[in-house]
Image (tube, rainbow, N blue to C red; front, side, top):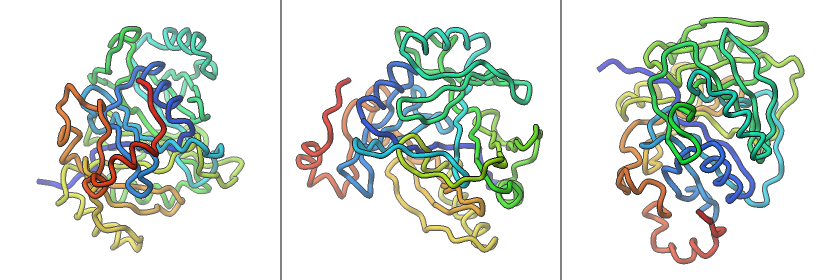
Length: 312
């Protein structure tokens, strides 16, 4: 089978208070918590995964919530905006909902012929709800107040803030087979034709190029999707051949990961579809209990006592 990058797999960000983070993404935005686990490098910290009903690649936003985290600052060398695809005609619903829950948002605008509603989460993470100009047949997770005709479908795009978009674009085009589709001012839109959705990366050349501070309310990394470990290794060799440093394969329980920093400074991950979020929970029970990596199971009681209590 031909090796391909299949758009975005997930995006990982940093949050502050775990309860506020959980409440906002599940109760205000209506996403499903598909996995509750811990940071593999810091097991006293949660790792939350929010997505659609099954936790499909291209829908998953993950968080490391540190209760005492300082507020971060967006800047160059970072992913600075996350775009979610929503159904046609749903933006007015979301404006009213944001008013109800006192969510910070801006006026509806248009970019590349698509209407979008920019807003922030409780930590200041910048997001957009976008009416996609292309077909999006995905269905969002439904809760009492948010039906599928307005629910978030999954990722539309992510924006990378850069001094100069050219070196990053070279990685996207020469290694990942993305193509430049459009340009508006200093924003360059790249996408892959291999998947219908979660396929867009916007490269924004900064007009005020200040370095960001990676803390609460900022993105930690973005992950690109591949089918399996064989395809992952194919891209690892291509990245090494391009003269970049990249990690070996790391087992994240629900996917396998490689990490490298692209020339513009953004941390990229390549993540596999396998084995998926149902490896240790049924589809009906996703996100219902704390799951720990095997190496931490002997310390479960201590870890559970150290983690902040989470009210569902």
